[in-house]
Structure formats: structure tokens, C-alpha cells
Length: 401
Ligand SMILES: C[S@@+](CC[C@H](N)C(=O)[O-])C[C@H]1O[C@@H](n2cnc3c(N)ncnc32)[C@H](O)[C@@H]1O
Image (cartoon, rainbow, N blue to C red; front, side, top):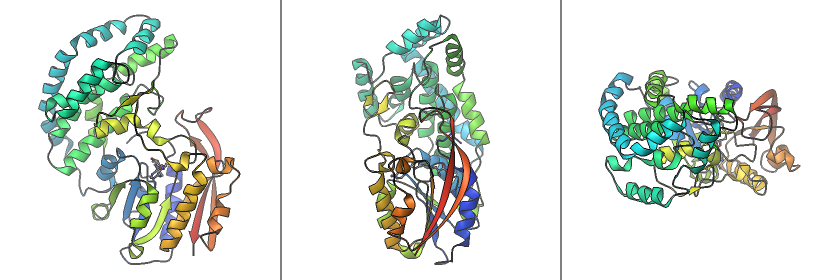
């Protein structure tokens, strides 16, 4: 799928076991995976309950629906047959439109690291260039092929080479020609997997790598030369649904703030809520903004050296000043609805740094708290400052009334 910060695959099995041991409620009651990310916990719930997955990042939708919701996958060769002619036509048109830039970039890749660095610092994009902004405004109003140049205008010469950006826009255009939801989701899932595999970055998109040394330059040149269409074909072929078709068709994905979803849940339809909220100050919307913008394709304003999308989601669970009240709202919201809450949260976290113990907050809202602990290494994908993995103890709290 994609490399994802904070995925806790090692907890998925115990979480599923804990949920299956909870006293049964309504026969068709579902589990709500409230901060589902890439769905590690959901993947273990076939045979236990159907699942409502929720996450604040919209781009996870096609990935999760293709894996956990659609009954069957479409044969990859059928999708490729449909996509290839549109892809080729758009590639040709974009190659002509951005010919000067493509040529210049090919030359720069043969020169010294300092030339590549200078190129990457100066390359025009929507965040820095009036001309790119004008082109983006025009493209945003179009519905046909002319709309599909966003990757070039926003992310080329940084996260991707310009030729890769052309290829990504051409694939995105080809996907828009698919008319059924299942094909669309599956092709978008492979597209997002391709974005992830071709990013010039440490595994997330908070920043792109710069050629500060000869080794870094070599790495960038290698990544920038990766052929996007070949990666897309491989990713499409590898992508497989998870669980049984009968289970999948009962699942769904919702995209929103967990705290807004809670009041919409009906008590007889929920067996348990599983919550795996973020535990650091790293905002996911910063680390995955390229995925989000290439999925939404909505031509946002672009901000700063990281070329972030304006108005990106800010999670209260990742804000020092709001994390306690966010947990209060979560705990109160679930307990008022009468659902059991299975909560995974590590010992060292944003909350603990503020001197607050999650169990003290929980006792205000739940009568019974059972805690299991697991020693672990947390992968940061280079997000939090320091080492790429951190030792930590992960807790699963089972909160009931
Ligand atoms: C620790 S990760 C969850 C990882 C997930 N369990 C997995 O296996 O991939 C936290 C997730 O919560 C999401 N998120 C953060 N704040 C949120 C909020 N207020 N509402 C919904 N989702 C949120 C993030 O986008 C991220 O995917």
C-alpha cells in the first residue's frame, strides 16, 4: 500500500482478539475504527465484525475501499487496457507544453550537485511563480484534459522530476475516464501507491530531499529517473483486497474528524470503538500533503518550501494546547453513547509530556479500565526529530461501563 507513520500492525491481532472477547451487543453491530490510517486493525476484523473506518485524510479512501470494501477487484489488465490510450495521449500533450522545462532538467541531471541544488531552489511552482498560479487557475476551471497538469505546476523539480510529474498527471487524467466506482478506486489506489514509491523524500512528503552532497545527488537522480508508468503497472498488479468478499461489502470508509463522527453513531449499531489517535506533534496532513493534493486535485494555494496545501486539517490530538480537551471529548463522547472503547496510546506521547496520564482522564468517564502493555519500536519515517525508530511501550486500554 503506502509507507505510513504510526501504523501498528503488531497491535492489530491483540486488538481484534480484545474486541471479539467483548460481550456481544446487537447481532449486526459494527466496530468503528475511528483513526483508521491504513487499516491495520481493520485487516484483522474479518470474522469478528464489519467495520466503519474513519480518518481525517481523504486520500486514504480509495486505498481502504479497494482493500476492505469492494467485493472484488477488477483484473489489472482490463484497467490498463482502458487507461493506456488516455495516458499516452496526455503524456504527449504535456511533453509538448513543458518541453523547455523538460529539456533543461535533463541537462541539469548530468551536471554537478550544486547545479541540481540551484535548479531545485529556483524552479518555478505555484507557491513562487505568478505564471504557474495563472496556469493553475486556468486548469482548475477546465474539465477535460487541460485540467491535468497539477503535479507539474505544484510538485515538479522537488518531490518529482518534471517528467515524472507529467506521467503522474497523465495517469490521473486517464483515471478520470473510468466510469465505475470500483475501477476508479482501484486505479487511484495504485496511483497513490505509485506517488508514494516515486517520492523524492524520506518516506513522507513533509519535505523533499535536496542534493547537499554527492551521495544525495545520486539518490535524487536515481529516484527522479524512476519510470512512473512501470511503477504504476506493478503497483496495480500487486494490489489485493483483504478479507472475505461477504465481510468487505458490509464495511465502509468515512472521511472526517473523529470527534464529529461520534454524535452520528447510533448505539444499537456499534459493538465497540477502536481509537488509535496520533501521539506526537507531527500533523499527518503535513506529512501526507502531496498524497492528499494529488488525490483531491483541487488546485489549493501552496505554502512554503514544503509546498504545503493551504487549509490542511489540523488534529487537536497533535496540538499541545488541545490534546487534553480532545481526549476529554473522545472519552466523554464514546461513554455517553454507551460503547466500549478500545484505545491504543503509547507511554511516551504528547499527553504524557504534558504530565497527564490517559488513565486519569478515562476514570472520569468509564467505570472499568483494563490495560495491556507491549514493548515496541515506533517508526517515525524521519518525522519526529532524532532516530528513525524510538523504543516505547504501547498500551491497549479497554474502557467499559
Ligand atoms: C496513529 S495513526 C493510525 C494508524 C492506524 N491505526 C494504522 O494502522 O495505519 C493516526 C491516524 O489518525 C488520523 N487522525 C488524526 N487526527 C484525527 C482526527 N481528529 N479525526 C480523524 N482522524 C484523525 C491521522 O490521519 C492518522 O491516519
